[in-house]
Image (cartoon, rainbow, N blue to C red; front, top):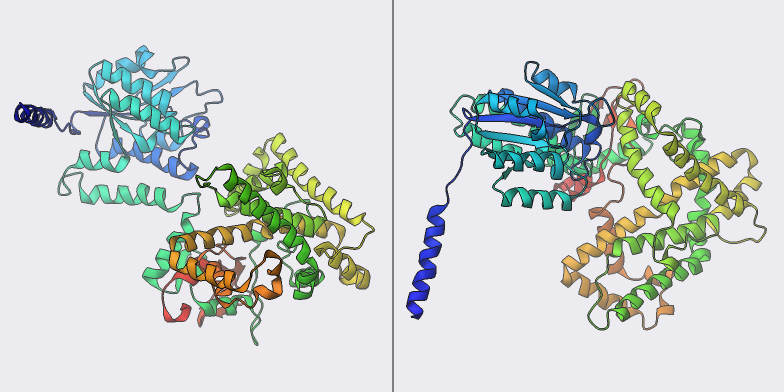
Length: 574
């Protein structure tokens, strides 16, 4: 009986395996549908970056021309907020049926659209749309019901969240829809590199779309891409017509330190020009004299002597961090607490700088959450990267500035006003305290002509709130991650710290300098996890100059990237 049961299970398994049929795309029996890839709807997509998704929908539309597939375009209410279909897609298929739906959510409910699909005479349908759980899913399921074989291009279908995409894909897959990315669809249509279209046609297509899709993600992938280029081509690589990146320690010296007989490399205004209507900050000051004046006013607040006077402030917030972590451990009731340490490091560093810079904490640790202004600050940093990118195209920048909504402009003004108010409250203090602002005020009193104006102080402390806080938290998070991944090193560090200190109050700034392994770990953390991947881009001065012995024309952009310098293997960077 037992043997019979096993045999039955094996037989059922074999039968199920034999019942599966590999359904392949046939370019002579396939049609392509471009569904609601509209400019307004594209702004709803959050499961892909903007650049990544834009490249994907262009690639999807281009499949029609590459494999000579009947193609149908359709939009939903394209005269309203949904927006028009991109001109590039329309230009690819000037003679294709273009169905402008005015009310139907599901394209299959539109009689003209159904007629256009039926008129192709094809029984295999490739489609992509916005959003996945509606425009792609509804149509795909309707086509399955109508007897078609359907391939949903997952690269060219986007929605609000990864979860919504997963739910929609699961529903389609259960109904028999084939879920594939653009590359897989292209390979199934081609089948053989020796065919036509084959390698001669498909490789340029992949270079044009897939490479762009994967190289220009807005999540910082270009830093890693440039590192790969340096590993392949060496310490100097031109990555744009007027942009050279170096991965060599001598480049740092040549670009940032004064050399006898050489001019100074100034900050690249594309990256560092101040916002219109705002005063210069220490970061945005392109003029060397202005930058030197501000730096001199600030420098006394960052000396070893100043740090010792500020140590009680550091101890206060580090102590509060440890207290919060212990509370979470106790709340876990002996089960072990799982903690995302990144926000906690951010809470700590922002609270510290709030106290050191303005005399008042942001109370992130106290409330165990970001202060609303800090949350706004993180969003503004992300937005700034897109604004800077637009500066490479002046016309686009001009249009972008004109299109900024009034509520967003007000948000920016409120953001700056928060700093103005904090600086003013600190200036009104009559009690002397050893914070960073006190050294700036003292310098202004002693050197009125060489101090910082009120506007410069406001702009600079707005920048320092980020670069003095988030950067430190980034290094700490990255370093801790590496230590956890290397338990032998973590154990060695733990032995050194616990062997040196018996009580918490013995841990002081001076005592910490006596721990060689701890300091080595911090330095290695800064090397492996640089908090600012692109360091203060500079431009070659008038008349041209040399970097690493290489002559460069004036105006060439030089964006030193610390990961490339620190991580590229070679004797010069060892």
